[in-house]
Length: 487
Image (cartoon, rainbow, N blue to C red; front, side, top):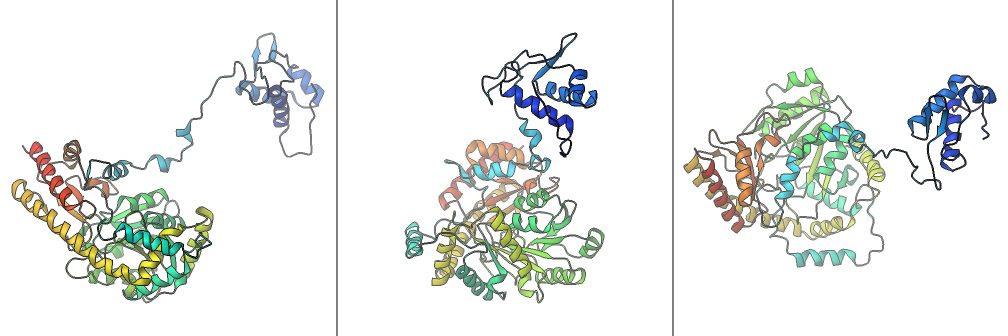
């Protein structure tokens, strides 16, 4: 057995000894039972301190490659048929995966995801999801637009910032909403969750503070929490997040940004008043704190349109505007985008190049065809008509349940959800268990509170995705579930 020491190397000497012995053992040159030199003898041969050899032997012993017996010294305790094979006598040590996963991912509550996914299982009536209506976009039409997009294409990868023509069409769409930006200010993503994740990765560091409404989408607050930031929640009423005392919160916490779901809030359906939108913008200018305004429901109004977006009132560049077609386009063909200062969209594009390599090409091309042809705006009218009909049908059932059981709610003026306060003494969790047994899903209200302390007496029902027949059947089953729990 010949070992060498490189005294010019930055690798510690005990590691050099350990590495060479390990290699000799695993290669089979030192067979099982081979008696190693004593610590003193090997130290003398190598010209090192005895403790250095001892440390090397202890390392190999901890790996199960050698053992030590009183009066016999150190022996190889590993028989390897060839390099890489399992050694006889070496304990199998399975990887402890749970210990390797970062704590922030261990803490994610999965109840929301499980209920959301369950909504689309075969046989379930899906009041728990949040997906666009299926009716307005015929499959044949989607196929026709896809075929049109394919013709003449030889390159099926999207630029990191998204297709240039699609971004130009989006700027035209935004102009009709009072938002004037260039295509360089647009960054395309696949859907709202991905958009939020990228923006949070760009802006947030562990320990940062973010101000949000008290009730907010679980996808939003979990993305913030995964970034290591802390949420400061603000009470809400029928006009959205209450802004009267935001000055004090901003001065105290110095938030990285203020998040607001301004039109037809998920889950409450509240619409932030024009006065509060102006108040938020004034705060942003005064304290130089960004606003992230998410918008996926403003186009789904059934009476009067929602007030102008905060981004449309922003004469500077303080608002990062997140828009999603997820509730107004064919399910499964999601497109969302960020409209923001070029310093934001440019860096988001860089992140896409590292984390995704390419954006989905096909949904962008189909969306481009709908925007360019004007069909998207025509279909939007169909969407509003379909969702209004479904809203009214669910409202009919809820009025009956309110009269019978005493639940309360406000009929939403837009969006895709009913936010319902259950009768006194009835818990959302117990009602969910009964409803699931009957084949109906919904989301309990506490899953929208980042603190999980409130909302236990509320439920959220989605009406955009289920058919009218499913709404009738599901609401009758929900009535039966409430009847079971009624004292």
